[in-house]
Length: 128
Image (cartoon, rainbow, N blue to C red; front, side, top):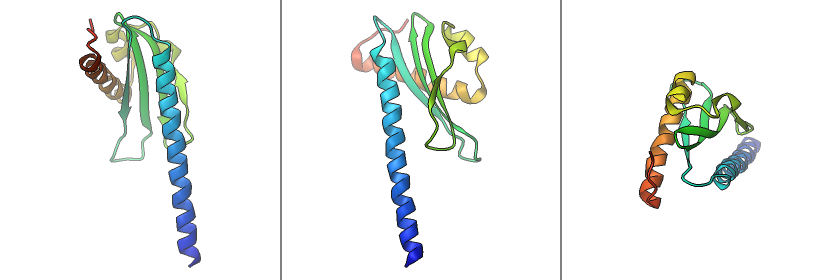
C-alpha cells in the first residue's frame, strides 16, 4: 500500500512540474513574440536524442531581414532548466548562425526555420 501511495505522489509531482515547465516555455515564446516589430518572425525548434540521456534543447529564434534579433536556448535534462539568451548569436546572418552552432543546435534551428514558413502560410507574411 505504501509503495503505491509513494508512486502516486511522485506521478502527481511530475505532472505538476511538467505543467510548470510548459507554462514557462509558452511565456518565453510570447515574450519574444511581443518584442517583435515589422516583418520579424519567431520560431521554436526542439532537439531530443531518444537513444541516449543527452540534454534536450528548445530554441526560440527571432529573425528580421536575415539577421538574428533574439536567440534563447533551454538546455537540460530536468524540468528545472531555464532559458538563457545567447548573445553570441544575435546579429548574425542565417549562414553564420548555422556555421557557429553545434549539431544539436542546428537541428533545432532547422525546425524553428520550418516554423517560420508555417507562420507565413497562416499569416500571409513573406519571408525574404
